Length: 166
Image (cartoon, rainbow, N blue to C red; front, side, top):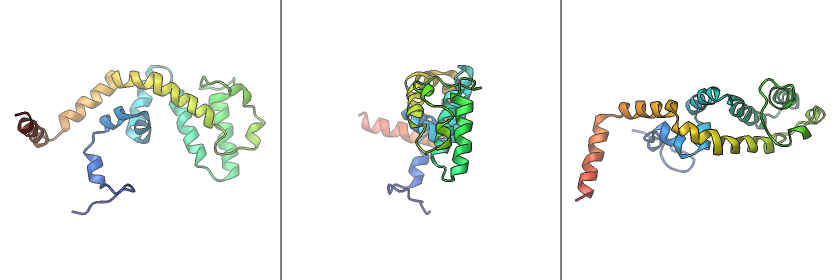
């Protein structure tokens, strides 16, 4: 069996043994790196009427990766009109958004939304993320994962705990 090694030298098969809910519970960063985690978190935020926070964060992540100036201008306008303008359809609540005006959009740069993105990240991390980890949505997903665990993995873990608990 051939293993694909990650940049840190560990084999990827060891990463797959960690359940996605365990990764999500470890950090908001892990949750946001997993498409399934983002999907579940969005479902949760939609129920809390704050889905715009994660959508803004994701839009900023995409924006930071852009190279083409015209595309950046287009995306910057889209982010501004969708999340930051006082007429925004999905306005996020951040300090300093009044400092952003349409003039800044003419000279976009990859980190122009960085401070606002960090505010939203912290808002999610210290507010909605902790509620997400206690939500039925998260707990149901976790239970489903645990039920899917192969029985031999459970028994070997129990055997190991019996050996060490003598």
